[in-house]
View 1 (cartoon, rainbow, N blue to C red):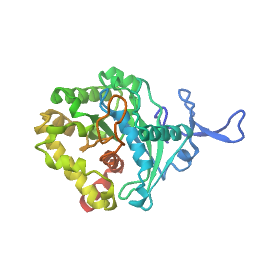
View 2: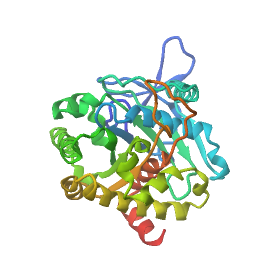
View 3: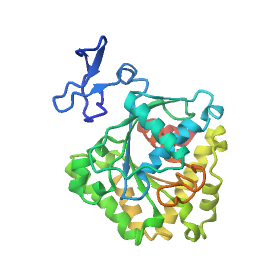
View 4: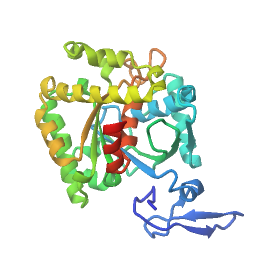
Length: 328
């Protein structure tokens, strides 16, 4: 089983802890020794882990994306669209993180910048999303400085090597020269993964264009993308087959946007060469531009679930992914 803290495969042990009546599961590694949630261990095969690694420069919306995702999972009644849907935080720390972020956004506040350290995972079980496998999300977020140099990635973001899908969060409105900056981010990742002894050819790439509500005229010639974003409510989720088909169409259009509008064709070519696949999403985690560290209006997440759906789908074995791409 994958230890969610030091991200190595181990066999967890039940141990007696002084001062507590119950036994707990603990990682046997001398480098870790963390307590592991009981439900994570006992139902591991039914809810296998999906590592969600947020990769991107400082200020490009990584922490805000997670906060918005937690807000959406808890505040929007998704069970009315997915009859079997449910979520569960697997330990007290994850429970506190989720509800702290939900309350923060509900009050119009934004999360602080993430410090540069090896993050502790927020562990959330997902059940009953149509066409997607049940799983346990292991969400990792660390400072954007970690993705400026390969050595920093190796030291503070080694969780990326255990992700089946690498999630790049890029805000086009923050880029001065998209071709150069996107190539830099990808180069740092490829070099860092090599130093970690991992193969990106075994991973999928999910490119997420964040803060898309700030693009304005830069989406002028791509009206279908602008409409997709602004009409990004959750009502369409009631038809999952139709929604996933549209997700694929938008991904292909965003690939064209990346090459033609952002002039980042080299990024696309390298992504095709070094990953099993590359998908593209466009989101607005808040729905509007904040003023300082505050939201002037109520948070309205736009298309925030799209990257999650790609991550879940890409967590399936390759033959199941191929089956679904052909037969739905």
